[in-house]
Image 1 (cartoon, rainbow, N blue to C red):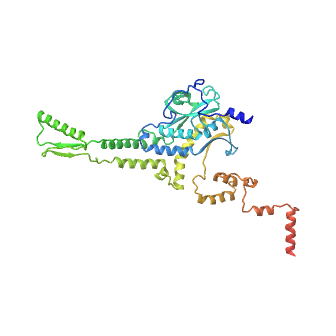
Image 2: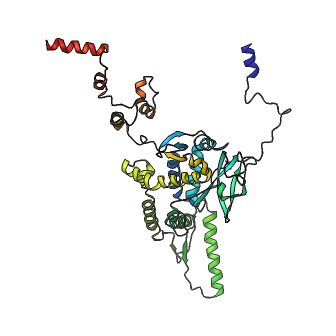
Image 3: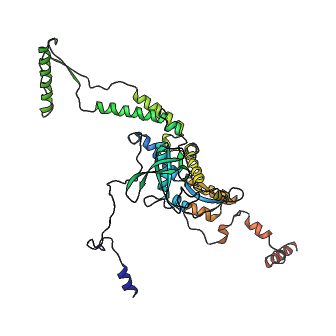
Length: 417
């Protein structure tokens, strides 16, 4: 019966189809992913894309959770709520929690201000000040009102981006902490983008295939007849070059040809290099961070100056908008947690592990989890204690009259004679 029941329930994605009896309205289709963020302000055509993508990836690599604190404001436990599910596991049908955070950070850095929009809730956000969130998406802010904002959000039911208007108190509005450097009209990054666009225009003009020739004819061109004759001569040379198999033309021995398609000297490249170094310095980024060769001090400076402000802006706004006053009074909050061992090389991991366990900061099982090993079943592996002095403590802490204590006393008496 088990075998026949299993065969009856077996299903194949290609074979178990009957288009004559079952029909689905899949909705509008697209050749590319329609909910993917599209960079604005010309960033997609410049080196700014790599910088924004690097920062958003580093922001998304940090865990953001809905947690509860103790009476001293310390992390106590993780709360398994719909908001925490959106931040850690699944934000919507298209994005995981990490992909949603990366989308949020990338859109914020590109546009300067972005909205985290709750899509599915247990109550209408406009009527209730407390509601549970089940799905979230990133929204582009199109228009500002005193208490409302008009947003452009991807609708997963229709497969299109649609405009909706929601109250500000029901939407997480996150502003880029580096707005003055990256998004202001005359900021360093916008000036760099304009210079890069000019440099691209010059390169396209120089590589357009034009010859830029000046033909000096052996007579003076001052009358309409001479101008007509010169124009006829120019068209003749153009025709020879375009119709010839190898692009060869002939001229008269008295005609002189000067070629002008030489690179025009300008300081655009020098200005681009200067603005790039200035932008990197203001953002706390170096070229070594982008290519992965940065040392620990450089990465620490980058984490503190760029990644931490972005994470704080996201968590503070999520806590302010999506946690009610009652929830905050119950010591609920939104926190981010970095992995301290992520940048530690293998050669230093053993020494750090010894210091952490010896100073009773982490248990052996917590260390094993960081390394990627399964927890040990020994109960002592979940205890905070110094293993280097545990034997002496165990021997000195034996109660009087115990069998081990009696043996130790007999040994001492025999040695004393």
